Image (cartoon, rainbow, N blue to C red; front, side, top):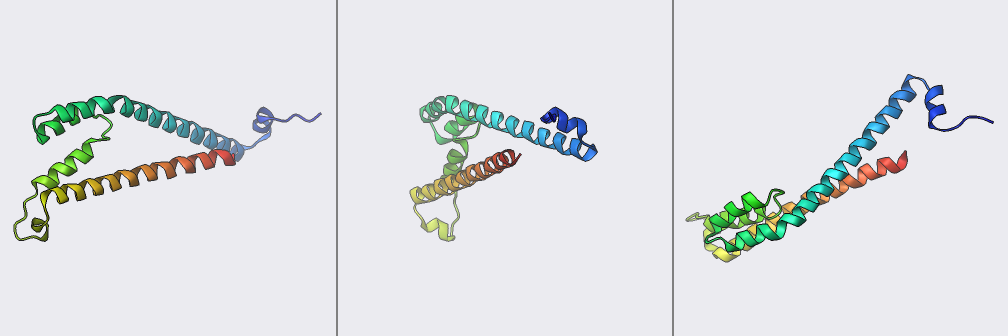
Length: 139
């Protein structure tokens, strides 16, 4: 009966075989660490989100609300949206085309752009996770 399995494979392999096995093990460990860290970040964001939003809406001004978000939103889920709205509402460019747009429309456009940037970052993360998962399935 021929011996099979990982131990036999490693015992009968050469330096290239050992290097490939070590590289695959390292990539597998790295992808699992990446997944665990991302899961931890997501869990923290879900836990901190309601409290961060409550502090934001209870603030007396938008600037104070952003300060409250900076302290409460450690994962930066809501902070980029609030900052984009604040910058759009404070933008004063006399003579520019933007000056002819109403303030509420500028804020709405800034929020849409911030959401699109967040969506692109999420899609990039999903593609990265899918590629890591595909590498693991191939082994």
